[in-house]
Length: 409
Image 1 (cartoon, rainbow, N blue to C red):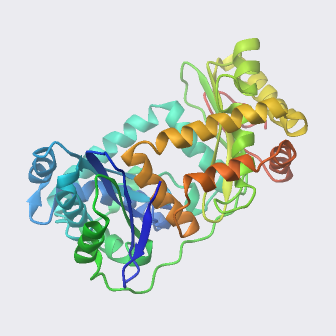
Image 2 (cartoon, rainbow, N blue to C red; image 1 turned 90 degrees about the vertical axis):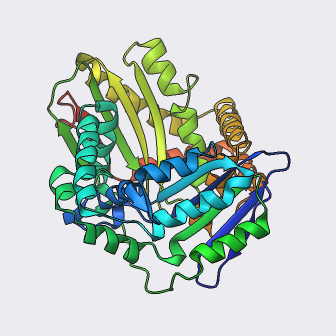
């Protein structure tokens, strides 16, 4: 990855990474603002706005936006997270100016029609209803609630029916104006791109956003607790989490390797012991997530209702034992998996654009593949074990669907 970073006078960051021989390009606007910045009464607003801008922007209606990108064989999409909203496009190199112009229209010139808003609310309420019927998705929201209680980070990205219905077009417009500040915007492009042309276009499209006061994001800290959903499904789903570390924490690579070793693949301890050796679970895995100020390490499981308690007890024991005796072979395997995953991702134009933007948001600069690999290779088994041991120094959060084990935790 040979990305170059440019900062416009108003604070917008532009990252460009040309790939010799590439015919296509990925371009996106990455904003470090998401659902954790929403007021409680308007939960789901960030996601609602992400939907609404596609209903009309820059003088085009929804159909015209879709036709503009698909007329050149491209794609245009977006997603919202707790700490990020992203608008991205994939096109042939010659069509990068069109793609970035369309994205700029979405972010800066949406129509935000009230009638369209009421129709789109119904779409999102349907999406919310679908999510509520998917326990393997719903368990994540329950776990965040158990981890962070009443803090903004705990609230679901999709929001809830009353807060979605309460939002107005004026709320959507105010959200964009208040939260989409230059310091929070990264324009990233990779593939068949001309760096000078991309920077010039970014200046034209985003350089006139007036700098101003950037709203503070409420800090979060891992609190721990339980969240039980009594609805009945065919299987029981549970998850538990322990305090992880922030994205910039020096121990983050060690914790990432520990997580991969204990629950990141079919060779991991959790998969082998709970599924292969004991038959206690259909799905069992560990994962982690870091934010600017906090993080979590988590284990998710889908199992028979009668085996849920046994499965959780064994999983917690597996994690505790791995913190004491993780082997050199397990660490080497985890490192190989993470290095391969990273380098394979960076072979794609979208992967490079995503990696550049996230690196800038977290570290303020573009970290090279060599740096990222070096961080993983610097972790020895003692450091990986220490990261696992640190998990047990704080509270635990437990969520369940279809079993009562959370109440007894």
